[in-house]
Length: 363
Image (cartoon, rainbow, N blue to C red; front, side, top):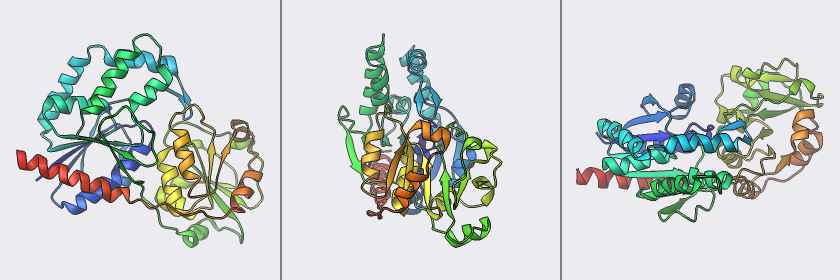
């Protein structure tokens, strides 16, 4: 039974949404594949996204960046956390290598904890990285010039460079410092457009439109209590926000998957992030996105999104006061450009299948 170990960052939900379709496809091709997931992502999210059987080991192998909110980075706190993380780096890597040997995988897929890749090298486990970004580039963007950052960045970069390949999922940051890049197309799980079912559940009036509000798995509550009511608009919001308005409904209560909800709505309001952007582009749903200009991945995500669906940036002031009428009307009066195709799923699964075969043949 071939064994795939999958280590996933829990910094937002995008890493899970990139990884699950590929692992699902790989499990379809290799029916006896054993899958072990190590991540701090919520078990409910994993159950929704992964269609194959898997063993979940709750474990946080990276932390990305320390955040004030879904769009605000704490630079000094992040740098301090990385300094602590890299103190005794070789010992940390050796410890994780011992844990990996005990699991005895044939292949590691990392999206995108670099500690896992460094440990795999020491443990003698074949490893592949896969993501639209890497933490070395993100860290350098914010922490360049801070005391000790050069050593930390080099250790991160070395770990990524030790993988058999880094599968760079489009849209992506350039990652020009990595010697092992292998680009693949977009990866997403497009939902089903169940508009009639959604309209019936919400008892929508004729011409009424739905906007899904989803901020990508990080705390970023919008003050919707202060927003004006927009004629003909129904908002689908997280239940955890506790919004009590007649024009809102908690989407968690609708018993529909997130992907199906997204595909069934007239627009989505989100932050720049891979998962929601990619799924919206694959089903032709217009996007309003919060301004996030300091996040280095944002321009690459936005430029790609603009090639597929109508989209507009929303300033923070408008998110606070709910002045979104003009932006929504602009989206809904724009023509669909051309939906994206998530062909990267098959490209990545094919590559991983070959890596598994090579690993098993050498064992």
